[in-house]
Amino acid sequence: MSHLLPARYQNNQMTNQFTKPLVAIVDDDESIRVATESLLRSVRYRTVSFASAEEFLDTERLSEIECMILDVKLGGMDGLALQMQIGDSNLGIPIIFLSAHCTEKTQTEALKHGAVAVLRKPCSETALLGAINLALKTSGCR
Image 1: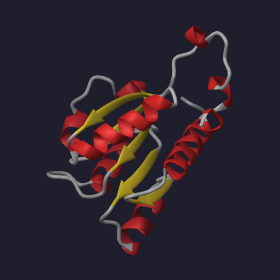
Image 2: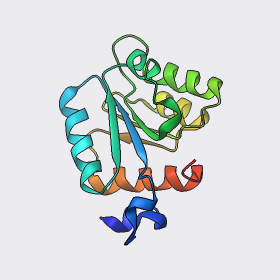
Image 3: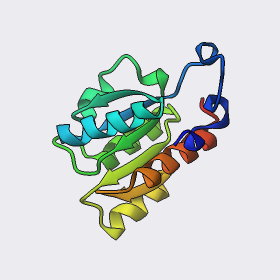
């Protein structure tokens, strides 16, 4: 799966020279957070996970996050509201929605407001890693 990583992270003999991308996972389902973290760590991404939008907004690591995997339906603030708040803050974090509760209207709204991809749970590892790769390429790995 290393071919799905941005070129600067592939076959790099001096990996300590680069900080690997930090991917945030925001999902209220702990099993999804754990499984997604495991997958991403297996291909050398750093991860940080949050059970809610509010927990994400409270982190002191916002400026480190290079990509976010976000559920639409969360307890409290939903994923679309968090996307809008991130957009208003000019953080420039590319967002991939991963949700079992995604209507066509929700998908259209997410993409209209800059989501890189909207994937339906369960999705393949290849689809998720491909979306992350695209997000990191389009953001220039900030």
